[in-house]
Length: 260
Image 1 (cartoon, rainbow, N blue to C red):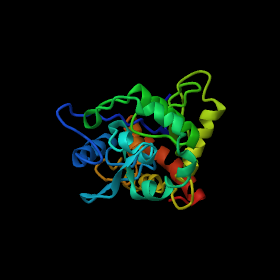
Image 2 (image 1 turned 30 degrees about the vertical axis):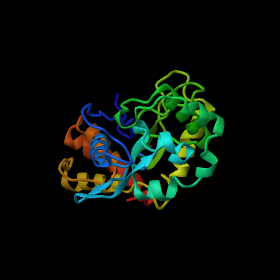
Image 3 (image 1 turned 120 degrees about the vertical axis):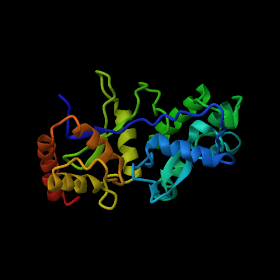
Image 4 (image 1 turned 90 degrees about the vertical axis):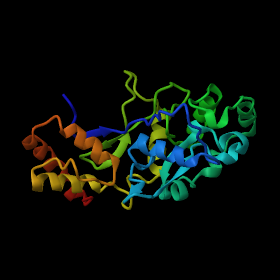
């Protein structure tokens, strides 16, 4: 039976146009458009919208900070994601020095031949470097899958609609996440303050209130967080009456937790 009280946060995988070049130093506009389409216009870290009334409210950001290897990471296309100004300019700055990779790891990465603006998929050396960075900094990078080399599970979040907070997702294997993998996921949630009072997701409560009041899934109304879209897609498998019942349960919990 489908769980209507949680939603899985997706892994964003861009489909690069083979006829175009992408980068941070050059070809940034095409990359912005591609990443916006890939995410639906949401930040890859907090899932808030980066596109309001036709205006950009986000930035192209470097997953592994370019200071680790300016020559190779500045325009490493798989290393470039889409983030809101708060996540990139404020929250991700915290712990940046601690996440800085040792020089010996960077030297090994630099041995790779790099196609720069024409790169389409993460190379093996970048994947290894990214795994080290994820484990060192307790952070989940997007686009593409984030893994820590210990078990090789894809690190995922999900949103608990009843509790109104982000929690570790499901790894899809019988053994579950390791202690270190849970540490990374929970560290990511803390880094971006996703469950803090100032950043907690209030769009879900607002959406549920609208569904209840209008007896409608509000399919044409935009909301400022990806979780609402994911939840709304799930509700389409229910009758409107049952969808309203689900929303009433979630909204009552939101009122108790004061996150409406």
